[in-house]
Image 1 (cartoon, helix red, strand yellow):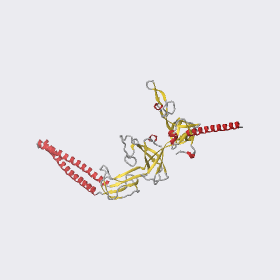
Image 2: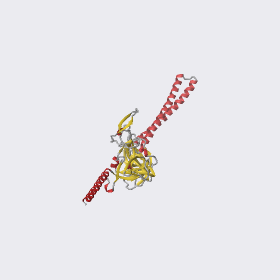
Image 3: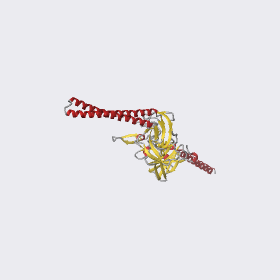
Image 4: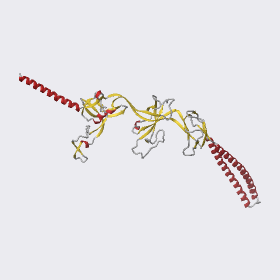
Length: 439
């Protein structure tokens, strides 16, 4: 009996030992597994967008400046008024210009009177020259008298010609003074709306003769509106004329306006140097500063309450794909792979053989092997994550197209970002449960 009891105890102890060993191995194996989030590659529709901010502007607008200097005596419009082409907008003090005009008119009249006197003297000289010529032919006067009469006639002709030139000059001065007088009346150059009034009645303005004439107001055609946006230099290659865009205006919450790309800037603009609403500047010495390109989106059927100068954001549709194989953007990571397509672990100190440029065999570490960085995903099969290089295509808001390297339904690691950043090829993985998800 004792012997049988002993065998039973020994058997139970062995079973317990085996169970303990198995439990330890299971626990150790579980601890070595990386917690990941998994998602299947599948077919879906993708829309690629380029988003940029800017401001709303009318397609056609004119800054109405003063043509002559003076004080504004009458301001006949206010902001928001609709105006017609040729309509009087303002008047500038014309006292000095009226005086200059009267002086020019008097000068023309005086020169014309002088011309009449000169013409009369020319006629007298002509008759005298003709009589002298006849008398000279009859030998009644000397050659000297004949020459004097001829010279006097030519002098009178020259005097008349000079007088006519003076009149032409004086008339040009009169025309200029009349033009200045007319410019004291400021008229609208186009049909539109007064969107900005910068000066008030009684203020002094500087005319167009200076380098910086005073802008009195802005008249704009609000029937055609645009959105000028600044697109990052890394995105501009995807933007093309005619692409559709959706505009969101900050001041008009919930309203989306459709538009179309109609202009793309040819030169980069240093970010912060100007752009929309300011003087656009390019810089050859900008170095590595961030740059943008100005893109104009013409709006289709803008709402009536849309006003120039409002901040807006444009989403330009640069590509649209239907029913393509896609995966989450964060699932695509970069790894260095050798010429055989195997992932290179930069921390592996093992030694491999490689041929140098001379054809001799040298020893180098894996870290020194020439490797190429490739985009890829970690495909999960039988609990093991294997890095698989892929070729990507269109990038959507949350997903990216896979052109080569995956099949529909393949399971791949989609998170977390911290895990994907350090995940190694052939790592054992375990699916995260909802209550154990990592941030």
